[in-house]
Length: 142
Image (cartoon, helix red, strand yellow):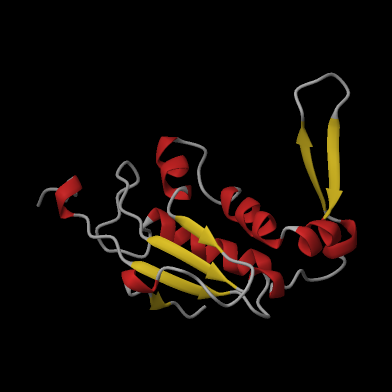
C-alpha cells in the first residue's frame, strides 16, 4: 500500500470559529494551530498545506493562568542598537488583545513557508462579532 499524498485540488478548506471567552490562552492557541496546520484531518501530511481557516472571537476575555498576566513580557526589537522594547502582558491584553492571541498562535506554528501561509488564514477579533458569516463557519468546541 502506498502513502497517500494530497494534491492542491484535493484539499477543501473549512472555516471554524473558536470562542476564547474564559479559556486559557495556551489552549486556544494550541487548538488554533492544529486547525491551521490541518493536523485534525486524516489526510494530513507535514509537507503539504492542508489547513483550514480559523476565526477566534472574544480575544479580550481570554485567561492567562497563574501570575502570567503580571510577569510575562512581550519583547520586540526595532532593529536599532539598544532598542529592545518590552511590554507586560497585562498592558498588551488591555490595549491589543488580538495581538496577544496572534503571537501565541504564531509561536505554535512552525517557522516555515507552510507556517507563514497558515497564519494568513487566522482572524482574531476582540469582541463576539466577526464579519465572516458568508463563509458559514462551524463552531469548534475545545
